[in-house]
Amino acid sequence: MDNLEQIIASQQEDMIKSLQKCLRIKSITGQQDGVIEVLEFYLGLAQKMGFNASNLDNLGGIIEFGQGDKTIGMIVHLDTVPEGTGWNHPPFEGYLQDEKIFGRGAIDDKGPAIAVLYALNAVKTAGIHPYCKVQIIIGLDEENVWNTTPKLLEKIKEPDFSFVPDSVFPVVCAEKGLLWLELKKEFRKDTNQLDGQQGHKNRQSLQNYQNRQNGRSSMTVKQLSGGADSLNIVPDFCEAVLTADLSQVQSVRQALKTFLAETGYDLQAEEHEEGLKLISRGKSVHAFNCQEGSNAISQLIVFLSRLHIDEDQKNFIRLYAEKIGMQCFGEALGLYLEDKLTGKLTLSPGYIRMDPASVNLKMDLRFPSGHHLKEVRSLVESAFAVFQADLAVLDALESLNFPEDDPHIRKLIQVYQDHTGDKEAHPLGMGGTTFAKAFQRAVAFGPSFPGMPKIEHQPDEYIGTDHLINCTEIYARAIVELTR
Image (cartoon, rainbow, N blue to C red; front, side):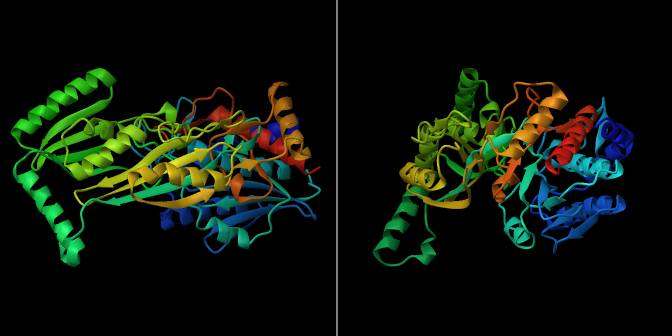
């Protein structure tokens, strides 16, 4: 093991440069050119090290070392969430300062991907011959709906056991399940597409709406937008444009002043050619940890619920404020669930678009590992029925529970304990979702240590150079122990 650490230390400068190059590739999930470019870069690194490395039809890749009937896998992903806002350092430059490498994906998951590759290279350089095959499996859609991953898995044989360097140490044996939800509701239909009695009713509704606007008895949300397609990020920005006359603008400003004094939220009002623009700024964190952020969408909706908005829109806004609001655990919806290992159910609105005709809201929901997808899906459908809207499931993943007494788990715990001296280390549960769920026999293993701040998906994401080396040493030890 001492020899491995010496080899890894000698690779440090090269490792840092490789990670910086990797971070300079803008491989945002769902953007094909970027994810293919980063895949080819990573496979090229492996080939230079002497490994067999293959691009599997641009669905992902595989790197192999050793031979044998048994296979141990390490599963990484090279796609990232969008950069978002609020950065002090360029998100795609691999900026190095104060022994920290900054960039989107530094800790999730490009840094750990570099660590496992250099760990495998250290094992190879040390002349250690594993008694089984070792694979690094590379995915490209982990941060989005897993559309390409199932196709990737059809092209490979799943390893007998794998670990995913995309969570926390010492080892994660339980993960919450996931539901990505989309709620759509139409406020008014296009009268040109309607006929008969129903068409008359809708035309009358539209006329009433226009009359209300001409009389300025209420305001309309002309447009509201916030969040992005990556629902696993708590949105830090949302804005709305209200159709409002001078007296209404003054009323909104006074209501906003009172609201800010009560809540301390970051909202502001600006004059706009079509009325008044409201801007909400929150704090972005990973959706599974949404209680530690501040949702810009929810802040704005809660404020709008205090205003005299057009009735059709107001009904939705009122329900959102009452049933979702600034809560993170689904309490008002009757979705509160909790278990000892993975904690509470979380609900994080991550995307919204609203205009006078309709609203589209998308949400990230994580449920405890002690509950199952079928049960939770039924609860969710009942809970959201109050919105009288169309509810669709965009993505669904079952919760994960891996046996804590599995011999592979015991080896990973032992590796961690030997390296850190933490003899109290034991398997954990978590709210996040990793690629472990895509496999039958996989768990998450690092890269974050207990007590480290949660910086994935946040501005100025980074990995420390010492942290990178430390992880590489642990992963090299794990490869040796798992392949004995």
